[in-house]
Image (cartoon, rainbow, N blue to C red):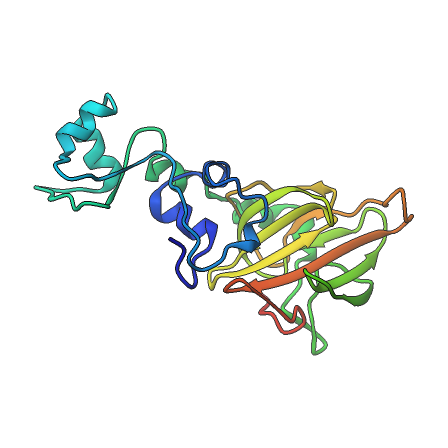
Length: 239
């Protein structure tokens, strides 16, 4: 069950499952709508029942006790408690950890990274793109920025890409989760240069804008979440 401060990425990492499997198992389309108290089904995990042992679980999943110990970090004798989750083959901690591609070194040497920007420029917060900004209200509020066709979109904060998918309202949407659990949503960067699980540096390019054929504008939607609530994007941490 979701606790305060949980995010889908932190849950996936804790239980050693891939984020895409977690989303599919729970039919989640919007990762920012995670509410405290929501029950979350962990794919690739066995819920311990009365009488279960590592041996009986290994038989049920056609694996070995040694594999279960390795996947769950067990050492020595283990007393399983009813309700505990035991990771079984198919979704291990190593898969979740390995999926976080540390590409900061690559970004640092790429042409896009040469335009990396500090958190403040002349006392003004760094934004994903330069352009005319306006506030957007409604169910999902945030900041819309009008740019130009081909403008690169930059991550304002370092973090891990936890979402990369089309959205009916914003077009292609990328969400980056920072180490202090802020979620930075970038919508409208139709050409995306990052993947789920990829770690990006502040100031690294995550994609580029394209013209909307209906409006004739290249427009980015930017919003920031913390603990499931939208916060003022201008006040959100940078760097």
